[in-house]
Image (cartoon, rainbow, N blue to C red; front, side, top):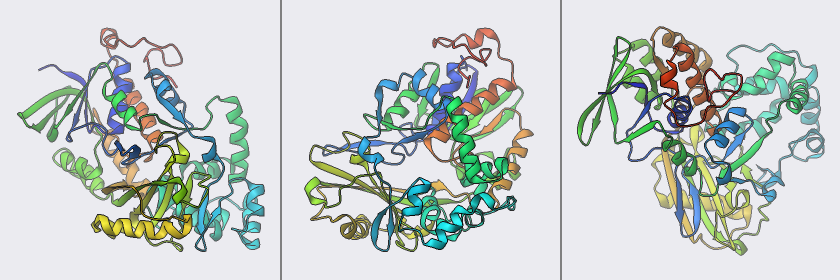
Length: 480
């Protein structure tokens, strides 16, 4: 049996991104995926001329590692940029109506969304002393810095809509790392934003929102077909053992039990799966993983004729605060965001329901999900008639929720990992749930593996990918 440099358990976006960075540096990599296809929750589906996304629908990027991966993987030509119409507005459900959500200070001061008291509290932010507790919740952090009104009307719907979580118990440092870092570094969010704008002019990575012409599955397929990466589907890891010089892993497959030895092991599965696999390796680490909770989310895609919708759909969509909607957290106007998501003369609306706010949606049948969704959208968007296309995706464990003393849990996990040579945990419960975060974390774990051991030059040269030059040229492909 050939020894692999790295074995990755879990063929979702994190595992595939890690494999890409490692193989690009010349290492031999094998990926085990329990499902029938790689990609995890990411899947693009064409139905009746509509292109829907089962999970992530786009990449909002500001990281150079992601720019590098997309370029070097040959994905630039497959990218599709956000349409200009989607940049016009972002909406918020407010008093049973959709109101434009301003993103700049001047527009916020003129917006009827905020009371005079709320506007004055927002303007006072630069004068608020820094120094919250290390384990502050999102609600505590935002209220302290920006006031209760900003929390209820902007941040709570963002946390519920994008993270499926509850800001009252979500760790601010885990869910809003950029904002908490601004306070720590500059003492004020406003000062930090100004400083970052100046610095961004000197660094060349601008914010970019994009998808791919054939959907997010394009990214998955490209990464899974990376030279030097062997992806095995239908491989359910069932046993791990530390051995001299690496790790022995066993998987249950349709062909029977299969084994593989590797110098390094990346476990890129959801936390409960990782906990079960690692119980015999480190029971304390397994217990820490078992404490991570997940939220259920239902995604309802509706395709309609354009003239069946009164609203101009001149933006990305809308978020719904918990005081406005008990079930629906947000709605994306996919046919406004990207081209070719709907046939000519049609529109595609994608709604998100559930999360911590309404976990019961996981048990609803299709009829009730459709009824609840359309019942909410009809008065808001002026819908007439029923959709000509309806598709529903369910995720009982959609996203990890960063609740409680989450940073302390992550630090404890990192401390346990330091004692276990060659073992690496990377999944969306560490370092962010977005595709951008997962691609960047794949880069980070690849760097750690390459720095942990001096790989022979001959092994690094196995890759057919040309070696780049740069700051980390000794570890080709991992430059930032």
